[in-house]
Each structure stands twice: as structure tokens, then as C-alpha cells.
Image: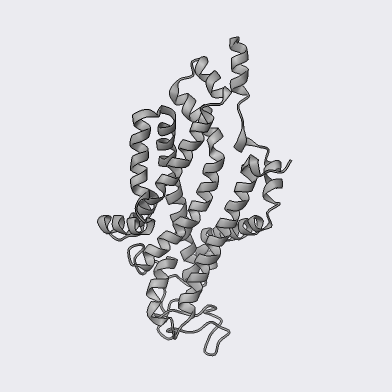
Length: 303
């Protein structure tokens, strides 16, 4: 085999995630739930970005004359507080709007950390194999041996309750999923002709890992990132509810639920609306993740 022929094989490696945008959208749009999820998620992003302009009140602004005021459609409610107020007179709608900023921030940071570290460790494990692979994967097995929320609680207890420490703990808990997924994808790609050809023409290890192999492993990682985004929001809300995440008066949805526990029987809105916000956001992201999976996985594409 000549050098020219080998280079042609390398250049002809699968493109996967580089598929034409119109083709991607045609597969994605076939899933109506995914489109609805995408539209809702875009709305959440817009609300979070322009929260300061959309929210009618400040998230921590108190109105002592309107404690636990019900939503406007109930007796005693006012239009200036559309979704009512909490126990110390803060507008629920404004706090929910600003809470979207924290939820998106948590999801972005956790997924970014998990994805970056997971790709590095997974590439190393799948590419070098041997002792490196064994060492990395045994650590991941140990992390997976613990219930995720329990491990996150232990880590936050060690680091100290705060939103930043909660995000670090959640990122560590999610790490094994990215490592195992990357390793599996790398092992599959290592047997392909374009990788063998790249080795023959002397492509260096780092270039082979990050330029030749990694781009063709990204499709499942993108889907995992989308689904982990919702998991990060749920875990952060759970930690906030247990008092180990964001601390009051931060308008994070889980922390809002924790503050409202004692009023669940006489002020349903202070518990219901943060819960609905978490539910709808997570559902929208999961639906969007299903659409990404259908569009990026060639096995699911119809001919």
C-alpha cells in the first residue's frame, strides 16, 4: 500500500457528528417531543439571560404587607404577585425566574467539568490500555459502587455546604459515565482502518487521540452530556433541599423547596411552583436528549 493510498484512508475516516446540519435537523425534527423540549429549553435560556428585565421584582426583595399571599387567581391574591409570595414576602415569580439562572449555570459547569475530565481519562484508558486502563477504570468502579446522591452528600459534607462545592461533588459523581463511554468509543474506533492507517504513516499519539479518534467519539458523548445536564439540575436541587447545596437566600429551586417545607399544607404555591419548574425543565432536557440520540446515532436512522 502506497503512502498516498494510506493518507486517503485517513482522510476518509467517518465524520459522524460532522453530518450536514439539514440532515441532522430532519432526523431531530421527526421526534416531536424533542422539538417541544428544544423550544422550551430555549425559552428557559432566554428567561435566564434576561431575568433582570423580565422579573417584576428583585429575587430577595421583601414585602412585609404580603406574607404568604396566594396567586392572583385565588381570593386574597394580587396581580403584582402573579404566583404569590413566600413566608417573608418575596415574589415567587421573580425568584423562579432568577432561579433559572442557577439551574442553567449548575448544568453547564457540571457537564463541562465532567465532559472535559471524562474525555481525558477515557481517551487515556482506551488508547494506552494495560496498567493505565486498569488503574483508571478501577477508580471509576469505586465511584460507581456508591449511591450517587449519598456520595455527593459525603463530598459536600467534607468540602462544606455551598453551591460551588455541590457542583464539584456532582461532577465527580457523574465522572464515571463519561469515562466509560469515552473508553468504549475509543476501543471501537481503534480497530478502524483510518486509525491503523494513521499509525502506519507515523501520526503522533496526542494527535491520533485528540484529532483523529476523538471527533468520531463525540456523538454518544453529546447525548450523554444532554441527559447529564438534567441529572445535574436534579442532584443540585436535591442537595439544596437537604441544605447542602445553595444556601438561603439564593433563589435556587431546590433551596426554595427546602424553605417552603413547613408551609406545604397552608401555602401550596410555595412548594408547587419550584417543583413544577424543576419537573418541566428536566423533562424538556430529557426530551431534547432523546432527539439528539435519534439524530446522532446512525443505527437509529432510517434509510
